[in-house]
Image 1 (spheres, one colour):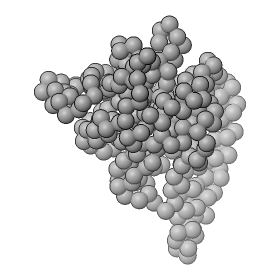
Image 2 (cartoon, one colour):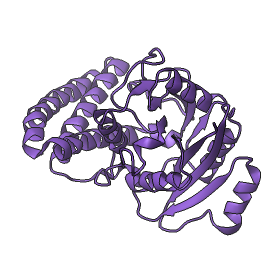
Image 3 (tube, one colour):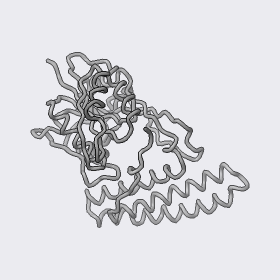
Length: 315
């Protein structure tokens, strides 16, 4: 029996990256008895992929591709539109990949095979990051440790994931991204709720995608802003799920500890830099990251949005 798979891609003002992403999807090995198609959601006030521009993309690809538009700026808006667009095709499976990523030819084959073998409804794989410019020496990349395929997980991002159509279908779990989380953590929140609803989620260690990291994303300002955003959205997520009082009891002491020790490390690192530059810089920026996390947690408790995603890296 033939099953349907829809691959959803959300994009905003990155036509070259999107083209590379779509070309990689067009080169996928199609699993047996699987009918594949692509939906692209352009998240911009005015769409660019209409008329001849959309037709030109479709002509280059062998897989069917359908363009949709979401004018409300914000990742959860775009992702919910992508889910709705996918549901129009009555899919058995929906895969999500970012527009700045390229899939290995066996990406879908590995995800589907692992989910079938382990009777799972969600499969999440690793992302291999390709840096245009090396990150600063003091930056510790947040790399996931290898885990055996089939390891049960309780949360996942949307940069490399496949999920059963039942999870989003109206006669299934009916899951959607929380549109209040416009500044981060909407994907982690989505899959935490999916896990809580009883869906089995697994890690698929050999289902690989590559992500292009532009030089603009590894500047000091952007790296620190990203840490601030992650801490803000993480705290706000807890406010939404567990209430402001419980979130405050958890985050206020944690935030002040982070800010106190962050300030201390920043001062010591600054003093140390003239005598031991690398060690001093590492301590200095470690302190700044702690300060970003502490202040971000407080910002999230107050429900104040972050503007990290207002800046688009890449083209």
